[in-house]
Structures are given as structure tokens and as C-alpha cells.
Image 1 (spheres, rainbow, N blue to C red):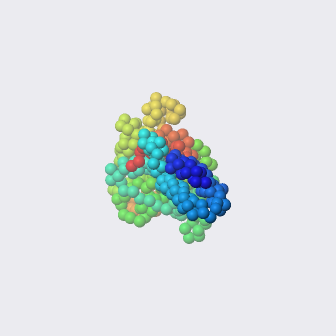
Image 2 (cartoon, protein in one colour):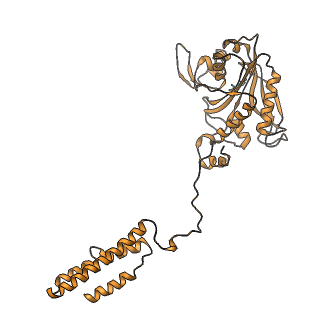
Image 3 (tube, protein in one colour):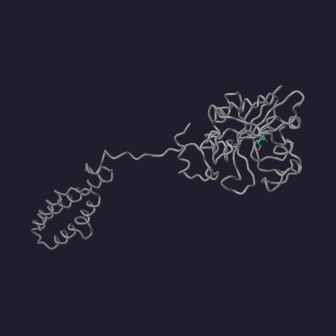
Length: 344
Ligand code: DAH
């Protein structure tokens, strides 16, 4: 028995585990319930009483040695420091961690806001759940206008006092709130989310974002509107971008126009984006209809104003050449992370 103990002692002294697995095999071999230590103690029971005294001491020391060896390596492995240079490769690259970026629509909204701020515009917001008055009636929508139809608008409930309640279909409702609650001059842009009852496709969505603009004061003219929008386009899409205005119709502006810019891709030569016309439409605008001013308690003999409204998705699509509107709301990180460098 003494010989065995000597042999095992040598083995234990020489033992240098390189992994937690090796240490575990050691534990099983020596300290396990069917291990060598257990065998030695069993054998110890059979030796003569004379031998027991000397051997007992040796056996107990051997037990202590095995346990201490196991314990010290166990602690090393648990603290993550195996003491083995081979486990720690300082030349490996560190583990990078990804930080979030801003959503492309937020980036573009911010850019639009910054440009108009330079021209003295303030920023205002209004509710997404609107009553009939602010979304339609005050804006001169006739009773039979198709936008008032269930097909186009998400109605929330019928309200005897305020008329129908709906998810706003445009941010023009915020102009009404602004004019009702203040006195001219007004010079503000109003970004926000709007809703329309549309089937979701690459080109249409049931919610999207707009920025409304309003400037009301004495002697505001269409020339002011043109110059403001021209400046915006140069800042947003680069010097030299051309603009053109086409007559159009909106119930709340008279005269009304739509504004096109020279195609951001082909610069006017013709490409699939602009359908080979060289122009892409970016917004609607016009002079605030006197009826709208009066509906909001503003003297239309004294004041005039212009308004415009643009879709943030549209501007973003043109800026980043995004062809499918659904990408904006799917939260696919492979799409979103392409904008991460633009954290502002
Ligand atoms: N509200 C219009 C829309 O949703 C956009 C618009 C056009 C806003 C002309 C305006 C405007 O203020 O003058 O399509």
C-alpha cells in the first residue's frame, strides 16, 4: 500500500492540467466515489492494527495532497486564469460590439428641420388622432371629398360634438391648430406621422411621414414660397438641382402647385427613377386659401400665407435610392445598419 501511495503521490505532484476537462478526469480518478482514494481507504480497513498507525497518517496526508491539488486548479479555471499562456492569445482581434444607428427617416427629418431652422422656421407638432374639423373641414374639404371616405381614411369613432374622429391623413391638420391657437406671423414646419387606408406595397403604405410648412404674415407671396423651396432643394439635394412648379389642386391652397426637382440619379437626362422624364415630384404647395385663414380666425384681407407638404419617405428614397417603402418599417438590421455611420 505504501508503494502505491508513493507512486500516486509522484503522479499528483507532476500533474499540470491544461483544461477543466483534464482536471475533472483527475478528480474522478483520485477523489471520485469509485476513485483511487476510496480504494485505498477500503484497503486500509484490512491492514493489521500495527501497520494502521503509520499508514493512517500517510494516507491522510495523501488525501490532503490530492484534494488541495484539485482545489487550487479548480479556482484557477473558475477565475478564468488557467495560468496557461496557450489559452490566452493576445494577438486575437477584440470582440467588436455594435452600436445602434439612427433610422434613415429620422436622419432625413432632422436634416429637413435643420434646413428650415436656418430660414427662421420653428417646429410644431400636433395629435395623430384628429377630429373632422382639423383634418378636413377647416381645410376647406367639401363634404363629398373622397378623402372623407372610409376607403381612404382610418376612422376611429363617430363623435356627435366633434364630427368623425380619424387618424390624421396629412400633417396639414397641424397648420389649423397652429393658426387657431395663435396670432400671425406664423413660420413653422410640422413633421409627423400620417395614416391612409392603403394596401401595403413597395410604393404605398398605410402609415408614412410628412413635413408640413406654413408661413403666414402680411404680404407673403408665391415668390416667397418659390424662393424658400428653391433654397431647401439646394441644401437637401445639392447646388444646381433644378426645380419646376406645375399647377395643381388642393382644397386648402389657391393657387396650388406641385413641385418637381431634376432627377437626383440622372440629373435630368432620363432614367428609370424619373421614368425618363428627368423630373421627380417631391411636394405639394400653394397660397393658403382665404377660407382656411378665416376658418382659423385670421383676417384674410390683412394676411396671406403659403403652405407646403412633403413626404419624408419620398425625400429619403430619392436621397438614398431606396425603392421599397416597406423597408422603413420592417426593422431589418441589414437595412438599418447601412445608415449607422450617420449617427448625429
Ligand atoms: N396635405 C397634402 C397631402 O397630404 C400635402 C400638401 C399639399 C400640403 C399642398 C400643403 C400644401 O400644405 O399646400 O398630400
